[in-house]
Length: 319
Image (cartoon, rainbow, N blue to C red; front, top):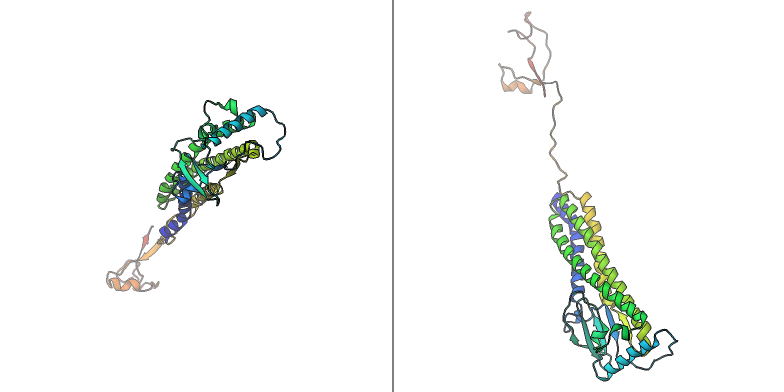
């Protein structure tokens, strides 16, 4: 029962580690295959440009750098006129996908960009603004937001990769934790490092896309461009974090509990020192070994050890 109990104790964190790894794989798969419904619905950020209108949909208060805003809108108008501006753009960890929205409101992805490590969504490249630099087209708010997003996106990508590698290592090492507590110690150390990186990855991803969506809403919402976060993607992201934290906790518990040793041990009774054992009679042999000893008076005046002695001989045994 010892090994069985150890296996049951390790099963919970092992399954949680596997669940976290599956969630991370889904994060990596988002937007990689436009023909997969699951991957299509997994995105960090979505910009809906179908209702773009170069004329403001509402009154815009006077704000600094209005001329810069106008240059951005004029550039977007030129792209929309040439049909280069798609109806929506979805951003994943490796790339982005773009598509069209029909009259019924159904989304159809028509193109996904090649995979790229440390990817970040660059509107100037995606919207094909030619011979335009960020300083020429962005106001201060949007420029700061895009710059921060591009830098943190690289960190977030690296954190996701490291977290996924550590999760795989944690799962493999965790299998050997069934054998001993030392396995749990090693797995707990790996799990602690993995938890740090996955929290960093999830936190930075959430922060940068919240920032990006806020910038789009404040600058481009008056012109009919909508921005939203991917609810499905962030649900998977934070589910991976929850599973990782829970697995780390159970790995730590497994160090102190469920040793894997059987609770039933053979008890050896040792004799106390200076006890006496009965010596079999040389006359009666082993038959006398079960007879109780009795002290009897000597007969015929023979002392202890004599031929007529009635005393039963004993020998001293030191243990």
